[in-house]
Amino acid sequence: MQQVALDLFAEQGYEKTSLREIAEKLDVTKAALYYHFRTKEDIIASLLDDLAGSFDEVLAWAREQDNHVATRQELIRRLAKLAEGQFGPLMRFMQENQPALKSFQDRNPLSSRMTELFTIIAADEKDPHAQLRARLALVALLLGNNPVYHAETPGAAHADVALEVALELVSPRGRSAGKAT
View 1 (cartoon, rainbow, N blue to C red):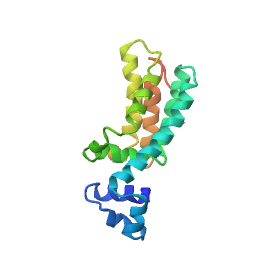
View 2 (cartoon, rainbow, N blue to C red):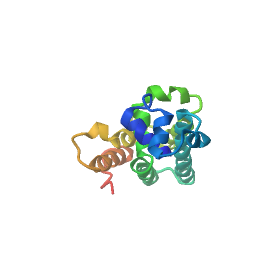
View 3 (cartoon, rainbow, N blue to C red):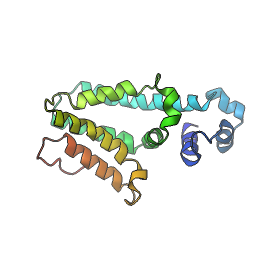
């Protein structure tokens, strides 16, 4: 249900998609859809909760690690898998539908997790430039995995570029992070 709704939101826009259309696409009655989700906001909230759960797994792993370059690089790789995988469409939806998400500002389960990710990834950096590069690595993953920003790049190449740039940003200055894969 969630994926069908997300696909319709992406195709038609959040505001222009109705619960009736989602039910029709699922080939269920509106009452059956209401049993699971009373509103479009409930659908988005459930998607955000699922993503937050995946972020929690990555954060739990990161909390257990010593914060050094190799750990930050592995953290970036784990986040890249989320952005490339099942949560890629949701992350793209979030980037492209900021006005629709305004109602979630107070109850967005991701904001505190993103703050913690920013803190973890830049934890042992004293230089403000290095701190910013570390935080920009997360932004590179999120924006770099959105094909809207890479219309000229075929296939999944944009995900590889985003990962490579993110890894370079968390690497010590002047050193190559190596290949993204």
